[in-house]
Image 1 (spheres, rainbow, N blue to C red):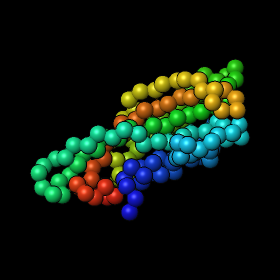
Image 2 (tube, one colour):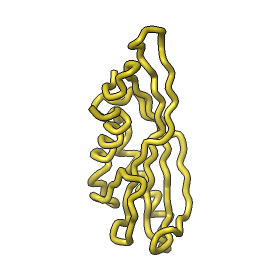
Image 3 (tube, helix red, strand yellow):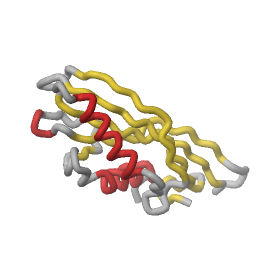
Length: 146
């Protein structure tokens, strides 16, 4: 079975696919080379994770606090800020009260950051939604959420 991190990333992609602006352009691979035709799009990453073991038994539960990062990318234009804000509104609405089929115990939006990226064919704006997601596993069994 895949790690719960991967299951969460895949579940987030399902929830976020089909939004009005990004449509089916939702990618889970952080190294995917993007072209103009891929924009606007969403990139989903599971970043840092803090883990606390609760108890002293061999199969003690672990509380895991995962950073789920959703990046909205759009081409540079006169309406770039509006496009990014609208994409963020769609993301926030789609993820409100989301547990990803019971994998997550909580999902809280912690921060939004905006930046420009000129590494692609044309400059793009990037709006990053930083979520903290809490989930539980048993020690030694990272593929099953408790």
